Image (tube, rainbow, N blue to C red; front, side, top):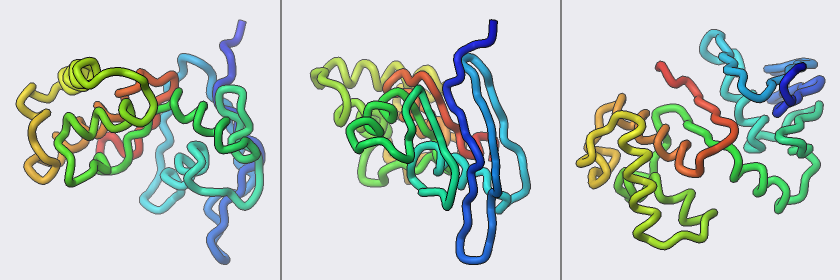
Length: 172
């Protein structure tokens, strides 16, 4: 028996002016699969990720994630799907004015009804999970090495215990 399809992309086209990044791209991702999209710089990997998570509106096509048509869904339905996903952007994309712990807590503060003590404990757990030392929670992104920023970004992406995790250039 095949696992449930959690992402279905049909005939996706992304254009920027005359530049066609994707044309009629179709892809299924099933629950439990680990998929790596490999390609040269500028080949559209990040554009695909941004399209799937709803940050870029494609020129054509359909994207269904966790049973929701992400392109046609209401803002409330898109938000319900986004709570079930985590995204680590290139170089971590951390908020520079927040500590690592505050960065990891940010999605929790926005999406979960938990007290500050619980939020802090969950953030510290995620920080430890990605291999950062406990003291990293009190540091600002500018005090981190590139690898540490990536780990902090991963901790933030994991903060809501997502069903689907997107990693944009995790090995760069």
